[in-house]
Amino acid sequence: MGAVSGFGTSGVGDPACDLAIAWTHFGGESRDAFRAALGLDDATWARGREWTLWKALITSAEHIDTDPSQAGEARRVIDELLADHRNNA
Image 1 (cartoon, rainbow, N blue to C red):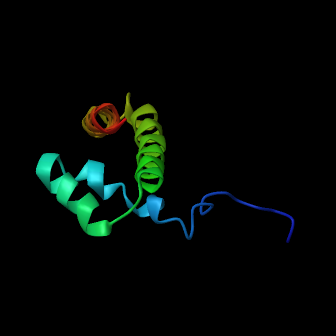
Image 2: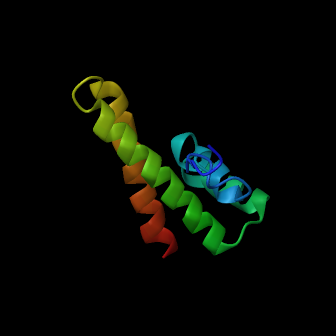
């Protein structure tokens, strides 16, 4: 069984994995303040966006027919991510 591997925790040790809160709960000035307080480089912030996009896309796809509210929230997060990318690219 040692050869069986899962990738659900492949981001362990990467601080970018913990940044989803920036797009799920913060916006505008509060997101900027959060980012500044962390002092992370641009590459880490971009990876955080990517991790969050991955999760939001999965959530949206899984719930589009069964839980429109949750799918809509995932879409809002995707919109936040795209706007943040445009503003920081």
